[in-house]
Image 1 (cartoon, rainbow, N blue to C red):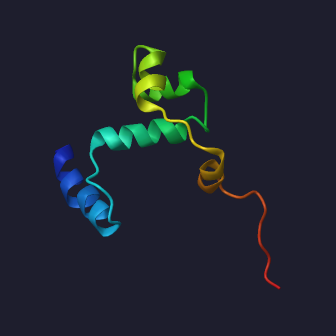
Image 2: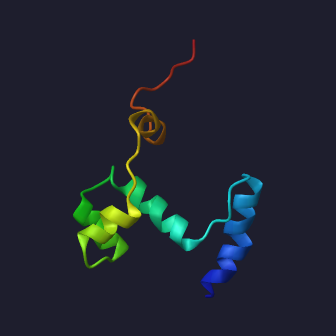
Amino acid sequence: MDPSNYRKRVLHKLAEDLALPKLNFQVIRRTIATLAQRKGTVKDVQGVMRHTRVATTTDIYMQEIAEEYAQLSTPSTTSSTAR
């Protein structure tokens, strides 16, 4: 399977539909590392990213998520009920 084919067929179209800049694997890897920091330890993320050094994961790939945005990416624990 050619990974560039998936990128062209799916990711570029998705980015265009959402009016986002061009998605590439670097952007996707940074997004995964940033979101994964809420799901496990830095060592867990380092392993998933297959980095030899933790500093590569934290300094290059992970970005801090501001608290007001962090709540948007976390599913609510309360359920809404119909009235």
